[in-house]
Length: 281
Image (cartoon, rainbow, N blue to C red; front, side, top):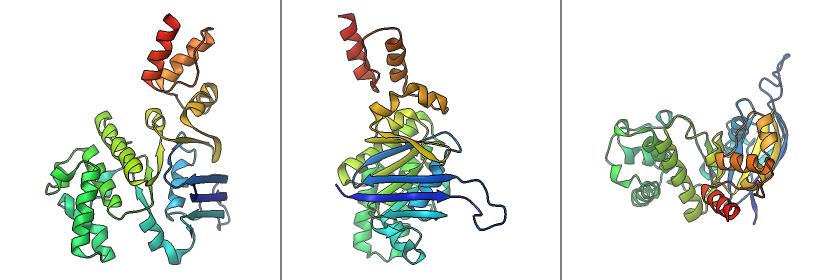
C-alpha cells in the first residue's frame, strides 16, 4: 500500500535563524506511514512527539529535511489550505476547538468556510456525528457535554471535512477513563470503517496497544518502530526512557524472568488469561 506520509531526515529547532538557537528538538527523523494505518507515537514529555505531529499539519516547518503528506510538501505555504483539508488535527483540550454554541453548528463550521453547499453540508455533519455516536446530541450546547463528548464533537468536525489523515495530539490527556475510552473507540471506528489514516500521539500504553503500529521517540529520535507486541516486549528499554508497558505485558515479563515458559509479547488480558491457563494445565 502507498505511503500517505513520508518524512525524510527531519531536523527542527526553535529560533533556528537567531544567534542563539535552541537545542534541536527533532534530530533527523525518517518515517513512512501507509494509507489506512493506525499508528501510535509514544514518548515521555520532551521526546519530540508533539513537535513531530505539528509538522504533519504545517503548524511547524522543518529546519531541514522534508515532510510530505499525500504528496504535499508541508513547508509550501501556498498549499497549507489544501494540506489541512487532507490532514486534520485534534488537540488536547476540546474547549479550545469548539467555536459554536450548538453541536451541529460547530461540526459545520469548517464546511461553511469551505463553501460546501447546504445539502451536502447537512449530510456530512449528520454522518460525522453518527460516526462518533454524537448524533442525538446535535442540538445540544457543547457546554452541557462531558469532556469525552466534547472531544468526539471536535473529531466529528474533522471527519466532516473528509480528510485522508487525522493527527491526534494527546486527545485524551484531559479526560477521565470513560472519556478516553469513548474517544479511542470513535477513532478506531473511523480508521476501520472510513479507512482514514490515524496518527495518535499519546503516552497511554493501553491506547497504543490497540494500534496497528507503535513508534517510540526519545530525545528527538525514533528508537523503536514495530507492531505493539514487538515494541512492548522491550520492557527494559522502555523503562530506561521513562515509559511503562501494559500491565499484562509486565506480568508476563516478570513470569518469563522467573523461568516460566510464557511469551513476552502478550499485550491483552485475553491473551494473558489463555497463556496462564496453558501454564496451569
